Amino acid sequence: MPVLRKSALEAYLKTRFGPSAELLAYGPIGKETSGARHKQYGYGAPVRLTFCQGDQTRRVVLGTMSPGPFGHEHPADRAQAMLWDYDCYGRLPRHIAALDVGAFTEDGELMSVAKAKEFFLLTQWSDGETYHKDLERLAGAKRPTALDRKRTEALAGYLATIHRKKHKDPQLYRRRLRELLGHGECIMGLTDSYPDRFAFITEELLQRIEVACNVWRWRLRGKHARLSQVHGDFHPWNVLFRRGADFSVLDRSRGEWGEPADDVTSMSINYLFFSLCRHGSLKGALEVVFRSFWDRYLMESRDQGVLETTAPFFAFRGLVLASPLWYPKLTVTVRRKIFRFIENVLATSRFDPADINRYCE
Image 1 (cartoon, rainbow, N blue to C red):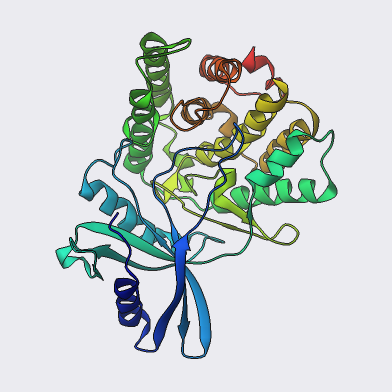
Image 2 (spheres, rainbow, N blue to C red; image 1 turned 180 degrees about the horizontal axis):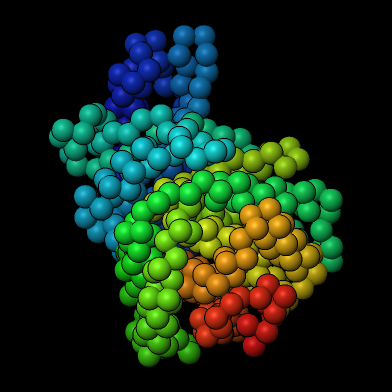
């Protein structure tokens, strides 16, 4: 990403929001890095801009995407992601609004896309704390609080609500399954990002998982009636809670429509993950909220079929969590349990939330 100059940012704000716009402050949005459970890798470094517009003070977020693996090697790859974000953020309930999409020129100016070198996305700012902080606390608790239960049920209910919106397009459903395997951010992009050998993780192990996931793709490709509105990256770092159970969501990804299991597995595997890091199994407060999440989702969605579609999506999310690139500080023991979970769910025709710990053995 080009170096952000105050003069260039202010000129852009005046173009976008009018001549009265005046930049007051700007800087990167910090990410915590302490503890083995926090992610160490990301796709970009968002910057918060504070500016005045007449007598109003506003805060927005300038998001970029860095060159790198996971299908982001070319400028066109990164542009595609930004343009899709701008188009689709506003159509998902509770999602932060995308205000503009633009680009940086070679000399660091911000402008329309005709002379673009790299793209950026401007979104509204939303107050709140990411949900992963709740999971950090719950990992050390014996039982969840009433608010913890309420938030878990709110997340499950939200997914059940957005997933009720269906879309008839068999080829699009097949494309989304194909992308689950072949997209640079998904299964094959992840397996390619692993070292040739890392502790017990070998090329043979990764290849075996890819093959099993492709078997699942062929098993699911006829279930196109399940194509639903999705978030696409519904993990704890993309949920901002404020007071009580009021929340917003961030950074929906890769597709407006998809398989509901993508969202459900993305969130629920993190209850398991945070507990594995602390206890070596799912137990205590996190076990309670894991079961509550699944119970609430199945009750509100009335979608028992999701239990027959989760396996390759769990594999995708497990490959992220066990990744030496994304989570370099994990112990070998935790990584091994995640890989056992991946292989066991891939070998099971129907996922059973009640058997969650057995899948890690």
